[in-house]
Length: 155
Image 1 (tube, rainbow, N blue to C red):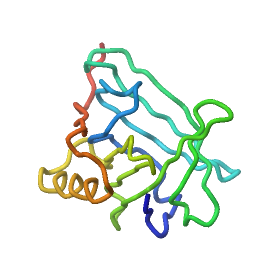
Image 2 (cartoon, one colour):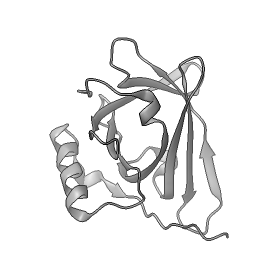
Image 3 (cartoon, rainbow, N blue to C red):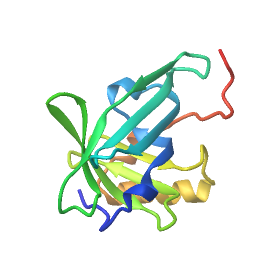
Image 4 (cartoon, rainbow, N blue to C red):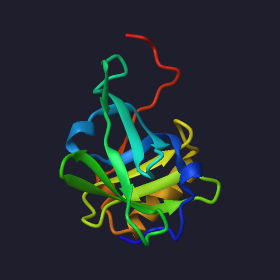
């Protein structure tokens, strides 16, 4: 999986809305999916993934993996640890120069995430990102747009 040359980690930190994905099992019916990153003092990345399952009214579910940057990758390849000792591959395959949109993938081409700093994207921008996902070798027919509705209603 190709990755971007360099990621400015402090700039990358913060909230990313999941616009579309070829999702992992837990997030296959996610609504309002958001991934938030915090750079820790030891250089690792605290990750908070939150979503609602199958509807906007469902309770919020969360996961809290910790990312570790792989040396020599320009901060673009991480291991995301959900359960010790397994680290899932996290590759920043595309990142626009303004740090507004990102594509995160895996070498196996089994999962991919299109994320943005905003909960929605103009259709033209979304189509360009889908095209980039195809260029990375993914079957874009498997992409699922994640329903986003903000501000959230309190269930």
